[in-house]
Length: 104
Image (tube, rainbow, N blue to C red):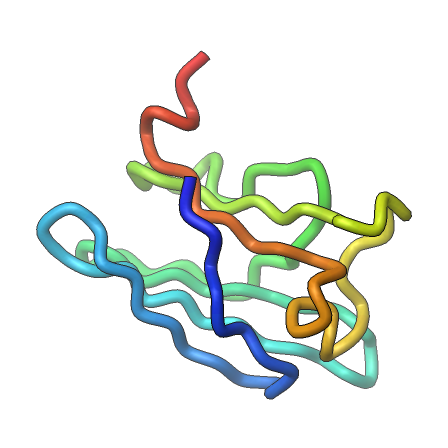
C-alpha cells in the first residue's frame, strides 16, 4: 500500500506513480461548486476518468487494473472529501493498493 503524497488544494492535479515496468498517471480534480473530488487513471494504454472519490469503496474495481485506490478519513467523521484542502491538512489520505493488498 502506497500513500499518495503531495496532493495540494489546486483543483486540477497530475501525479505520476512508478508501477511495475511503467507508470500510473493519476489525475485529481476538485469541483468547488459541488464540493467533491474525482480521479482519473491512465495506465497501460487504458484510461478511466470521472471517478468520484468516496469512503469505503475500491475505486477501480471493475476496470481490470492490477491496482486500486482507496481513501481514508483520518477524522473519523465518515464524510467524503468535500474541501479543496482535505488532502493538504491530512483529513483525507489517498492510497494506491497493489495486488498483494487486494488479495484476501
